[in-house]
Length: 220
Ligand SMILES: [Zn+2]
Image (cartoon, rainbow, N blue to C red):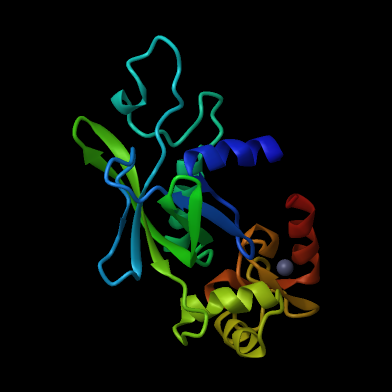
């Protein structure tokens, strides 16, 4: 765990699923190896992914597309960020949260607050492809669903009653698998422990006791 984090911190980006938050370091200097930019009003952030690891005898990391996977097939930090956004687009999860640190001068990092990962692209840059991640400043006092949701998400895995009512109505009061109408439970389609949220109806469904148990047995 510690060695993994150490590696990620070298790269400047470290993913963690909500309700925890990951970390992003922004070099923020003219000759930074990565092209990162704060929008002029300070509320948007474009963050470039990390390069392949430097290995001896190769032309250097800038000769390669930024990788989604390690040599052993595990996702890189780029991959973890991208997969989360893919799930976000499907409405399965809330935006992942990051604490962003900006470099003021050598050895001095300033806390730029909490940001939400909103989008990414795998974009052409010169002769190779790089990841670009778009983040928006988190406003935990905002009333827009996603932003305030992140705060709610931290607080509770309880499914609010207004969500239960909406889900019960949508699923017509029956288990979505077998149609059974007794011993019903509200189920997180995407497990809370993996960042699924209770506060989007799309992520909650009605299951009978039997299918609720069958499901929890198959999820680690
Ligand atoms: Zn059922």
